[in-house]
Length: 252
Image (cartoon, rainbow, N blue to C red):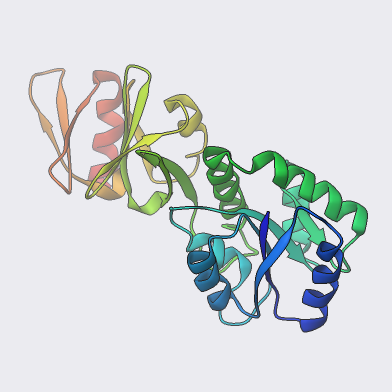
């Protein structure tokens, strides 16, 4: 695995470098001392694995994650001196973090998980989205928003929920609609809906969820049928059951 170490502390990078040097299947291809440099090297070097410090100058670790979009995404292991919020969040799931000073045992466990993820781009993208969503709380910059994974051909793209206009199911396929293009979702509509709590999305039909921030108008087509028009001109049918909820949003 080709690894990148991103940490603003030279001693921390040195310790991690020495630990990784003892492992035959890990090669360090780069080091970054701030978030902007880390993001640049991720794009340029395309490492398999990134050890990412949360607190760095110019751009923190969560902001680096937020700015990852698509292409060849790396496995990310968070490194932190102490971030109570992040540690509590990661401990509730399968996400890996390393607490400084780095424990050899913990490092080996994190690398085992990284090895299992390598070669699985969808799993890697979903993992990065989960880290980004963990970081969308109080530990992150207000600029960091929640992420969802979309597929375009063989690529997995990290989309901001703010750029998503609607989700639409066609049989077993769920489309993620943005202003310019559509992506295939990696999860069914009911799972996506469970992640949209307290956000600006509203189910308008059993096969569609729209962002109320991207609704231009709601128009009747019969006494029981309505059409919602998005700001890009896309139209979706609103069920009779959901019409009054959508109208209340627009009236407010």
